[in-house]
Amino acid sequence: SAKDEIWVSKGTYAGGVILPDGVKLLGGFIGIETSNSQRNPSVYSSILDGKLLGTVVTVAENAGASTVIDGLTLKNGKGTLVTVSGQKYYNGGGIYSLNASPTISNNNITANSIRNLGGGIYISGGSPTITGNQITSNIARDSVTTTGYGGGIYCGSTTAVIMNNKITDNKANNSGGGIYCAPSTAPTILYNA
Figure 1 (cartoon, one colour):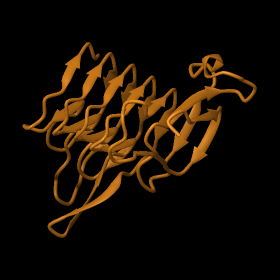
Figure 2 (cartoon, one colour; figure 1 turned 120 degrees about the vertical axis):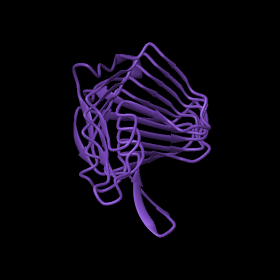
Figure 3 (tube, helix red, strand yellow; figure 1 turned 120 degrees about the horizontal axis):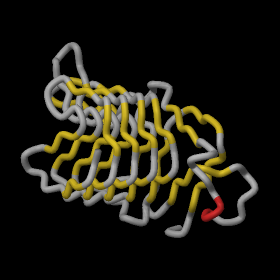
Figure 4 (cartoon, one colour; figure 1 turned 90 degrees about the horizontal axis):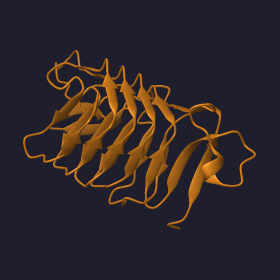
């Protein structure tokens, strides 16, 4: 239902997650809380490790703003396989969001490596809010086709709000080591470091 929450206790968990519309995926728990306000992500690290098998968190298509990813470390994502004209690409190592408007906040998105668009976060369509995250050491690079856009964040056809994030040490083959926005995109980008 729209009020569902998934509480992730401290520790490291392998594999990817598909996040349905209206569900809150929250990290920073120790396991004894009775309210999500009692969690502390800066003390209790909840790590989702993609093990280079795919995207760490895939947001359901058409998910709204009540779909939340907050207080987690998302690492070692390889991305979602997309085939274009017979070529295989991987987009969105940490988070893959297509035509959705999730709230992505207070996460550490790091060490994700993909072969096309959005090492840390891939967003295309929708109006996501991306705020208060640390997006570091992600890579968008394909050594075969030499493509790679948006090491930290890739934006395509979206009206996303990208604000108050720390975006550092990300790399892309072509453009946008930190953020790459496709020409048809109109995001609001403010106060990132």
